[in-house]
Image 1 (cartoon, protein in one colour):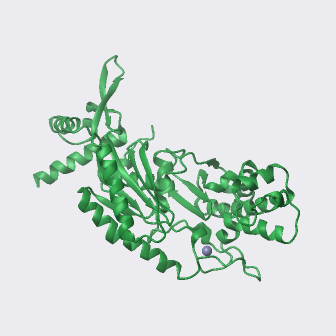
Image 2: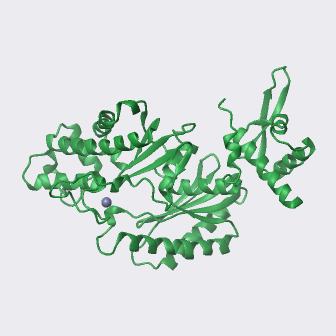
Image 3: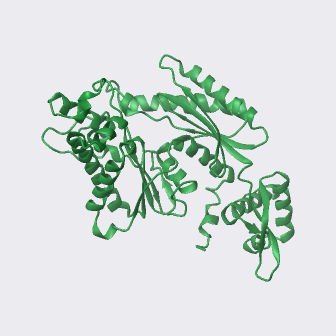
Length: 412
Ligand SMILES: [Zn+2]
């Protein structure tokens, strides 16, 4: 019992310092019902373990200055791993979100999953050897992501997706646990963009916001009342697979098996297909001068054409942007966020595309929900592995058990 009490006190105080830091010993003691001596001993242990640091001094209002305590966010680190059909990314991040090291490994199509596991384990060991002077609190693995551009309609979405995930849960995870002795957890990545924006990015301090990925797929990551939303099965925010085209021809067949999805009509592969179809019909465009227009069409090619005033490209980019904007506006109406964060490589289509999307969102939201900002994400590339690493900080602090501490937070 007393061990449990001691452990409970440690986590309570650690969470208090995380949430309210920099905070003085006196302020901390006044917030909790423990003897100052007990609090002092725990703080001393934390300082010895380097989990917290004394950071400067704060004036107490009477000219006196006090030592402040805060979590040692440079010492506490975690490892995050993400796997797509193309590559495995392994990184180590500090608790403040700074990435110290990041490694990419190609996923070889013919390679067995055991061999890929082995390579990821080697990466993790390499990182641990490089950062022995830090405290690595755990390893977070994102459930593998499917990439619509590489997905074929043979086999079902569920069978393909779950098989891939089973391997991560039942092979990679226990293997890493045994190898490192560290806590290893797997997470659904759907809320990672929201989590990363909330902890480290442009949505710090914002309680209700949505992140929208615009790339080979269209997806939403939601934060409602300060909590990223995963949904009961870890697939919340599938904005791309909401059906919007009910026309007679039913729209394009989506890889999810339905017709008329937002994604199958507006994501980057759909835009490229629209442009190719127009070229095949003989519509004039500066893109005709490109040597490999039928094999490869990049965001840079389309952007150049749009900026050169190419009417055909401007039409299809504007058309996709308008429909994406309607889908986002529907989500704004549902959730009434104060911020919409856009991310994903379609933003490389440039200002014309971004302005058309923004205009369409604004034009299609309910008048009552009109008070919100639209921003571009600044923490793009490593969002998924960084999200997995961020989840391990939550696990380390047992923040889910002590989340009532976070609700005590004064607004000031
Ligand atoms: Zn779909």
